[in-house]
Amino acid sequence: MERIRARLQLGGKSSYSEPVKLRKRRSKLYSTDDTTSPFENGFLGINVPLFTVAYRLVNCFLVQTSFVPDEYWQSLEVSHNMWTEGIRGFAYPLFIAIIYKTLHFLNCDMVQLLVWLPRVAHALLAALADIKLYSLVQRLEHPDVAKWTYFCQLSSWFTWYCCTRTLTNTMETVLTTMALHYYPLPGSKTHSSSKYLTLVALAILVRPTALIVWLPLLGWHFWQEDDKLKLLTRHALPIGALTLGISTLVDCVLYGKWTLVQLNFLKFNVLHNVAEFYGSHPWHWYLTQGFAVVLGPLLPFFLHGCTLTPQRYRILLVTIVWTVLVYSLLAHKEFRFIYPVLPLCMVFCGFSLASLKAWRRPAACALLVLNLIPALYTGLVHQRGTLDVMGHLRGLCDIAGAQPEVLFLMPCHSTPFYSHIHCPIGMRFLQCPPDLTGSQSYMDEAELFFADPRGWLGSAYPDSASLPSHLVLFDTLEKEISQFLESNGYMRSTEVFHTHVPEGRVGRSIFVYERSL
Image (cartoon, rainbow, N blue to C red; front, side, top):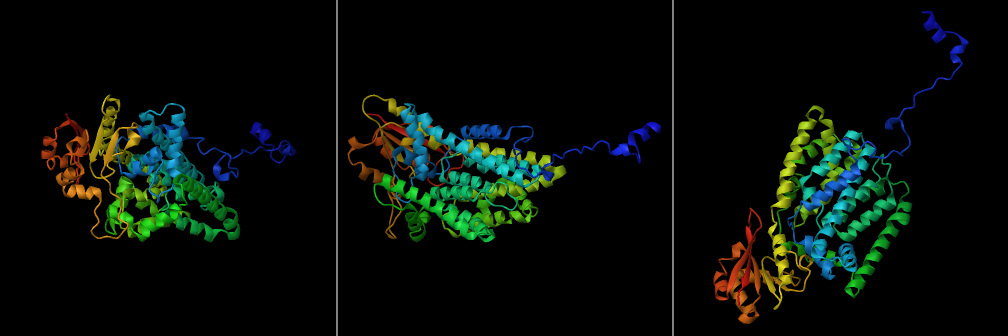
C-alpha cells in the first residue's frame, strides 16, 4: 500500500510535478485533416490502385466478343478513316485517332495493336473511374461501405462486359463516375466545381444524351449553391463555352465546313426520330427488363440499399429514377443507354452488403458466382463470330496476285471493317442509312437484299466476272442463295461459331465462301 500511495501521491504537490501526456487519437472520426490517403489500408490488404488496374487489364483481354455495331462504327472505323455522318462529333474518335497516329509514327501500326490498344486505354480509364468511386465513398462513409461498394463495382457482370469496349457509352460512364468524385455531395471533401463541370462537359461532348443523367444533379447543385452567380459566371458558363467552342472548331476543321453536331444530333434524333429506325420497344421495357438485366444479381441489394442509404444520397437515387424514366419515353431502347447510372447504383449496393453482418460473406460469394457466369459467357462465347471472322479475313492481305474482294451479306454493320483488317483489300457491306424524307415505302439496301436475296445479287452483279472473290454470311441465309452459290462456283472455306442463341437474320454460325475460278 505504501508503494501505491507513493506512486499516486494522493493529495501531494508532486502529483502535478509532471504534465500528464494524453494519447493522441488517430481515428478519422476525430481528425480534421484530410491528408491520409484513401488507399492507406487497402481492401483486404491489397493495394487498391494497382489491383484495379491489373483487374481491368485482365477484364480487357477476357472480353473477346462483339456487343453492338456502335462499338466499331462510331469509334474505331471513324478513327481509322476520320469520317463520320455529321450527327456525331470528332471529340471521341479523335482520342482513338491519336493512338492510331502515334502507332503510325512509331511504325508499329500492326493490326493487333490497332484492335487492342484503344481497348487497353479504355481499361485504364475504367480502372481510374473505379478508384475514384472507391475514394469518394471512403471519404464520405465508414470504410466498410466503401469496400463493399468497390466490391460491387468490380463484380458487376455488365460493367465487366462493357467497360473496356470502345463505346461512347463507356466513355460517358467513365467521365460521369469521375465527375461524381468532385460533385458537391453533402460532406464531400473532394468537391471541385471546376473539375466536375469540366468532366460533365466532356461527357456531353462525347454523347449529348449524358445531359439526361446530369440534369437533376446540376439542378440540385444550383439549388443548394449559396453563390449562384459565381457558380454560373466563374464555372458553368466559361467551361461550357470553352469546351463547346473547341469541339465546334475541331469538327469544322475535320468536316471541312461549318458543322454544329450537337444541333444535328438533336434534329435527327428528336425531330426526325432516326433512332426508332433501328428498332423500338414498349415504354416499360427498362422497368420490366432493361434495368434488371443491367444490374443482374445486384438488383435485390440495390433495392435493399435504397431503404438504408442516408438522405444525402437521395439525389443519386433521384438521378437513377429520372434517367430510367426519361429513356423509357424514347422508342429506341438498349441496355447500354442506362449504363452511366450503374456506378451510382453501386453505392446503394455497398450500403446493403455492409449492413448484412452475418450474411455478408455468403451474399458476397453468391454475387461473385452469379456475376462470373454471365460475365465470362458474354465476354468469351456469345457473339464472338463477327470478330473471329475478321481475323480469318486478315489472311487475305497476304495473298499475292489478284486482289481479293469481300462482300458481307449480313445485317449492316454486323462486323467491324478496315480497323480490323488494315490493308487495302476490297470490301463491301449492305448499307442501311436512315430515311430522312419521311417516305412510308422507304427500304434501305439491306432490307431490299433480305426481301429477295437472289434477285438482289442478280441485279447487283449481272456480269459473273464482277462477282466478289469471297462472301461472308450467317448460316440462316445459306439455303436461300444455295443455287446462286453453286452456279457461280462458290465453295464454303470457313465456318465460324457466333452464338448459341440465333435470332432473326443473325445465325448460329458465320460462313465464308470462296469463289474458285
